[in-house]
Image 1: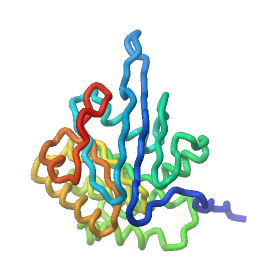
Image 2: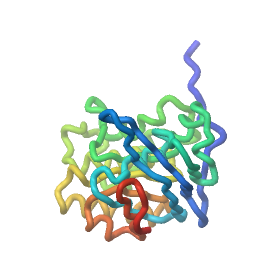
Image 3: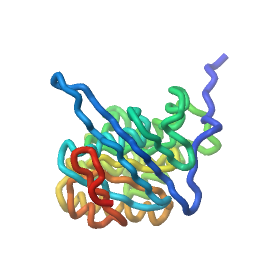
Amino acid sequence: MGRRTRGAPSTLPSVTGGGVAVEARGVAKRYFAGGADVTALGGVDLSIDAGALVAIVGPSGSGKSTLLHLLGAMDTPDEGTIHVGGTEVTALSGQEQVAYRRRVGFVFQRFHLLPALTAIDNVAAPLLPYRTAFDKHDRAHELLAAVGLAGRERSLPSELSGGQQQRVAIARALVNDPVVLLADEPTGNLDSKTGEDLMELLLELRAQRGTTVVVATHDATIAGRCDRVVRLHDGSVVDA
């Protein structure tokens, strides 16, 4: 008798239409490093409308990546509350956090593609352990076409340029129809022209799918293409 494939969680946050997609109130995060307490975030308040494309900017160490990790339940704050799509992320149990992370899209500076898998298999990989009401590879094929990689479905990561690999990573991040897409320095390993092309892609995807996108970036050009810029300094919002 075959192993039973798990179904998708039945209670997941969702964002439909307008309203607030992300809300953080009094969010603080501290770490112990070098024999001292380091405040990564100190009481951050932030609201992001559904369907918005928002840049989080600031110098290294300002808390950009920490904030994205907390929004994605990859870490937990020491204080404060976070709501995404009407769900209080900071109140979720460990198992509920796992289910929640399956509905958040993550894109990083490093592409994190599996080198032995083709582009289409990399995109479909997050779906493989679960039952779905649709064909997994059809969904992956559709998303690769949406990010401009039709015809490259069977290419290995080593056969793709850096920009193409990041497009595969974006397609993979969208495969679960995420409530929010979190991108941490997504153009950091790309040349300026490829980075601009990637930003154009994010704008197109947002327009087509209404996805809420939060981008942490050092790139002023990328930030300037966003609907709104939130500036962090020493773990605090100084301009929103």
